[in-house]
Image (cartoon, one colour):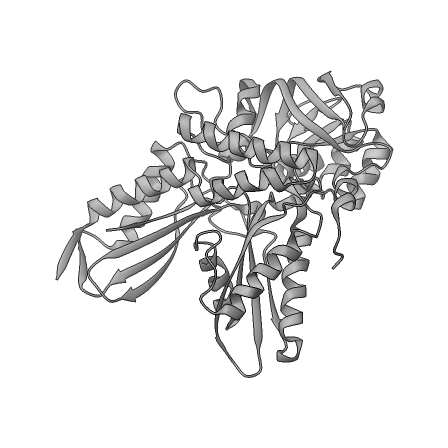
Length: 187
Length: 281
C-alpha cells in the first residue's frame, strides 16, 4: 500500500492518471448518491430526454442508501453497497463523463474496460463500517427522485472520506491482487 | 392457559429489533478480536479493527451498525399453552418492526413487488416470520436483520447422493470464494444439508443463530464445520475481500433427513454485520 493521496471532486484526467489500484485516498468535495432504482430511472430518463438529473461530467457517484438521520445527525449510517449491481448502467455513465464510482466488491469486465476507455476509477470503501463512514459526510442535499426514499439521488459533501482505489485505468484490481497473495486453496 | 397481550409483544419486538441493529452479538465481537491477532495481512488487520471501532460507535451512539438494516427475519417458537390476546402474534411482530424502523431510524429496505415498480414498503414490513409450535407456555422470538449484499451471494444446490461429502464441501467453498468482497467478509457461514429444496435454505439461515464456536452435537458434523472453516480461511479472500487469512469466523451446519434421491445443500452467507438476537416472553 502506498501513501495516502488527498483528492477533491470533481475529478480530472490528470488526477485519475495518478491513481493506482491499492492506493489509499481521502476524498473531499461533493459526490452524488445513486443505487439500483436511481440508476434504472436515470438511464430511462436519459433515453427519453437526453438529460440526466445532474451534470455528470467529472463527478463521482457513491453507491449508498443511508439510514435516516437521527436528530443532531447530518446523515444516518452510510456505508457502500455492492457495486456490481450497477454494472449494467455504469459504462454509459462513464461515457457521459462520470469519473469515479464508490462501492464495495468486484466490478465486471465491461466496467473495467470502460474505466480504461473513458479514464475513470472505481473506489472501494470499507463495507459495513457505516457508522464510522457517516462521520466523513458533513452536508446533504436532495437532488432528484425523492419518492425513492433511501434510493433517491442526494448530494453529499465528503470531508476526507477514506477509500481505496479498487480498479484503475491501467487494469489493476486490488481484490484480485490482494487475494492472490493469501490464496492457498483454489476451488 | 397463559395469556400475553399484543401490546407487550409489540414493545418487546421493537426493542429487540433496535438492539440488534445497534449492537453486534458479543460472541461475534470476540471472534473478531481473536482474528485481529491471527490475520496475516496488514490491510486485513486494519479492517478488522475498523469493524470493532464501527461496532463501538454504533452501540455508543445507538445508530445502525450498517446502513443496510436488512430484511427482518424471525423464527418464532410458540408454546402450545400460551395465547396471544388483543390481536394476532403476526400483526404484533410486524407492528414492532414498523415502530423500530420509525423510532430507531432504520432504513426502509423492502420492495413491495419484486418485479414491476419495486415500490418501497416504507416501514420494513412485512417481516418474514417462521412459526413453530413447541411445548410450554412461552414465546421465543429470534430475530435477524439480513443484509441484501450477503443474501445475494447465498446459494442452494440439489446435489446427487453420489456427490456426497466431497460434493458438499466443494459447493460450500465455491460459494464462499464467489461471495468474496461483494458480501462483506469475515463471514459467518450457515449451511443447511438435507430436507427438501426449500427446507435446506431455512436450515442454513437457522444455523446462523447458533453461537460462534458452538459445535453441532453430531461429532461428524462438528468435524465438518471445523474442516470447512479451516479451508475457507485458505481461500485468500480476507477481510472485505482485500486478501487475507480471515475469510470466515465460523461455519455452522444444520442437517435434516432427505429423500433417497436427493442431497440438498444451501449456503447462507452472513456478512460481518452479524445482527441477530433473541428474547423469550
